[in-house]
Image (cartoon, rainbow, N blue to C red; front, side):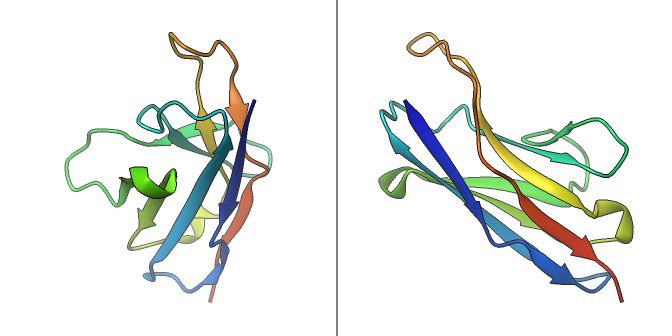
Length: 109
């Protein structure tokens, strides 16, 4: 079993930045496949990172020694308001799909 715990959410003004963290514990083989999703009220959950886009505002990074992935979010807008989740998808070594509990990000003035 793997546990995922997100942190770093909160209230930020439009144009601001925020960095989320997700730490994996338990039987973690690799954090390389980890991803970030978000879900806004009334909308479907969507993948936000890693995604290859021009001038991407959201970037993912990893600290393998800490089993932690980060989501750096820049130039935030109110449309970025959502609950953000980290996810460790099924892999060749673990068929389970793991999700964190989510962390709320609110972009508002």
